[in-house]
Image 1 (cartoon, rainbow, N blue to C red):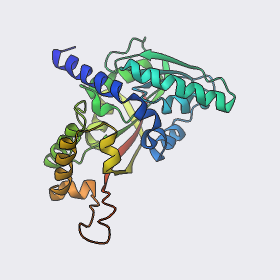
Image 2 (spheres, rainbow, N blue to C red):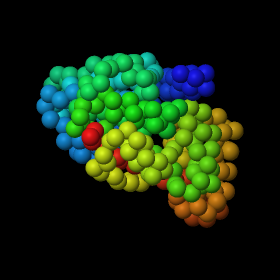
Image 3 (cartoon, rainbow, N blue to C red):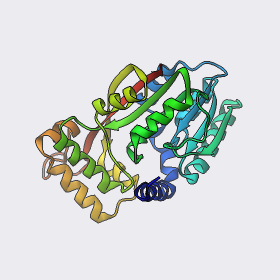
Image 4 (cartoon, rainbow, N blue to C red):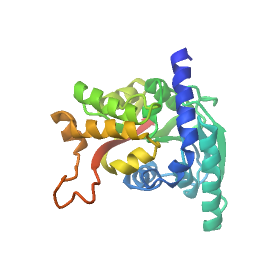
Length: 273
């Protein structure tokens, strides 16, 4: 692993270690269409083996376990695992069930598992933090069995390069551990190189409130001001992508002052050929 990868790895561990509990309680991460749709598409059966990469609050891992899979909830950041474990345990107690979940600190780009180990490999709303997404996809394809499924959900960027550059700068300002959001075409290319046959592709809109989005990372007032300016000054191609809803200063909505915008998620399902 290069020194730049080590630096990014450290940023991820610091950033998510500091805000681990936010990702357990986040409604965006803990519920929503892309979570339920991913689990639906996987068609998990009892006794199958699964690993959830960059599990965060453990929501996908919990969903897999509820459907009968033997699950490894993995994450690069130990504090994320420390936050996910009680969340999953409390869910099991509430459901009066014993969910077969184990926990492991795993780097998505160098998984310590043998070839053809798992029936399912999942990763949701995390690869934009990985230094080398192609390497991650190849690792996912390596550890999944032939005929097994790799299921990914991640934020994506538009095909237009300038718009993608602006969007990623916007994301990186808010969260220094953000590396890159790729386009749908990029993602399908990653799967093709890894010999994963795409069986399902789907875009879904994730509408976010600006204040919540900045609080998730405890942004400083200066950073919030700069992000606000970027959202107000989006070029046309970026505006069409983010679809910002800005307060009507001095108008009927000025007392509320809430701002909204869209991030787009790609749900991609691939089968190992």
